[in-house]
Length: 345
Image 1 (spheres, rainbow, N blue to C red):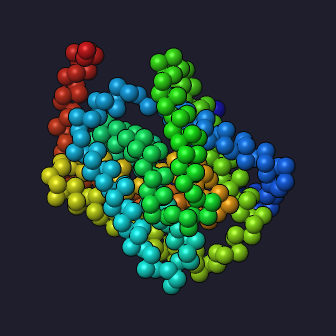
Image 2: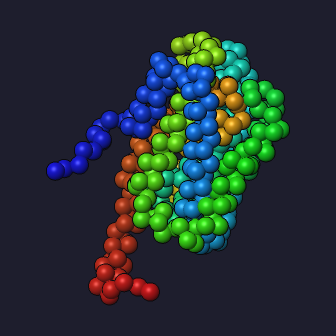
Image 3: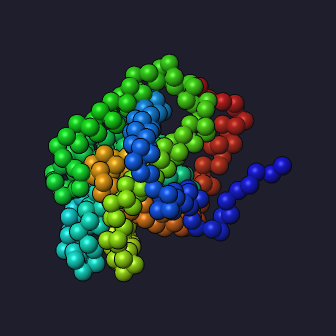
């Protein structure tokens, strides 16, 4: 039997549909009372396990090898944790015309979240860019974000982030950083198991995020937070995010060119430096924002889908660039020679 595949012509990520379905379930059947306490406890445990798996997956050897390309990684980190937040702060001027204050807080939080790993690698590969650099850049960003994102939130959001407080920084260290470090320390013994069951554990990853979304949006429904968002405000948020993504795509591509990076590196910088991680952002928001988490993660969920759709188009166009095709033709004889001579090393 042939495996069912998601139609390529359909631009919506199927996981986004699951996220939207989870939001709908929370709207119809929000967790209340004891059920809310159980869901909150399960969500906390799922988040800790999620970051434990992140730590177990990240190869220390690959990370150390990637340090040699430090200029590229510094550039990606600067885009993720400096340029993005500056644009987020500049969007304060759009309140209250385009954004409400809670939506602005969510948008600002979005700009503080680390970059993605999987989609950066996938799009860099499609566009024939520097895939090893994209792997390291995304991994470094995720690792740095565990520490930097809460600190930036403390500095830029302050007490305006709903349930955010100084204690949230300690909580996020215990809930995210400690499990991550534990995963790294145990990787020597469990790394093989994690690699062999990558697909199954990937489902655990996504299931954990769905549980976090359900818990956050259930609390938002119980507290009546969703009455604060109108269709007009939602359209304004989408417009602002479209401009934000366009600006970052432009800066990462032409800025990297100005810094003297080659085409392959520029592709890795553009895809790793212009995107934000839903997987990392959702658990952090649930810790930092508490009851306001449902509104805080709305901009991140919308931006996540937007970046996937736009970057998929860009990656396909980059793969057809004359420079990429010429490089592919030059590499073909070398690959043939390697194949004829057997495996190296």
